[in-house]
Length: 339
Image 1 (cartoon, rainbow, N blue to C red):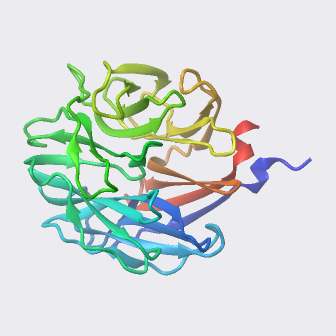
Image 2 (image 1 turned 120 degrees about the vertical axis):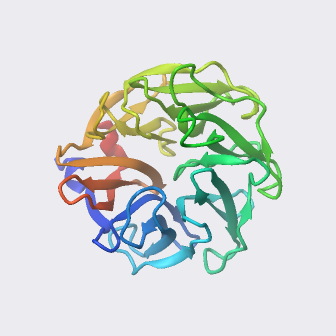
């Protein structure tokens, strides 16, 4: 009997080079004709640190991720430093929204959004979501969700000054009109002696929203909202160890279980990169398996996209010897997670 593991496909979809030393923070969305659009952060001018020049670039696949087009620009650099953190969302209206950060300085980083109504042929002008709040915001790739009631939730982490205050708090901006207007949630999530950053969201079966986030506490932490993201419960640790590193969660359409991708270690290195499934809404996790474990690399900033019976997971692959950071894609049959 053929093992599902034999069917796993992998590709360095955006290899790094000396001039382009980092390709990272990606997201993938299926277009109406079955093609896939990949959007990712391309650091195009020698530097690879978070404030180096970068734009949002794109590639197209016509064979469900096995091969990809040459890169093209999805969002030019309109920041004094860069734009980064691509996040694609198919809205209930049928349009596709792209969320990203515009970084002007260590004191000024804000989320923006633009839309396409013709399957990424053309895009609207970018609009700021939080320009009326001074300070430094972060968002992550593959994080924005639209709830079953139509509300869009954009999870963010925030500090008034990224260098003077290194302890971030997390909360949401929300929109009830397909992204035309945005409001800040009254509640926020913070830890008394640690950072609470790079949050993500998933809608629970009972209608609550779970926020998970990166901490320096050796575990993934989470909080819950029972009012569609406007207020949040006291944060609590999950049972799984994690370094100060981002995670990703998505509900598997075929089974309605939750898939988690994270670094299953207290760290500090971001290796291994691991997957697990939960059949009970995140209370327990099973089928824990490493998808990357080479100690010469670190792996982080995953995204998860389901396309029919396939699961596409992107993440950066950081070569510790060369310091080059390439974007990698692995494609799994959904059933592989249940072996």
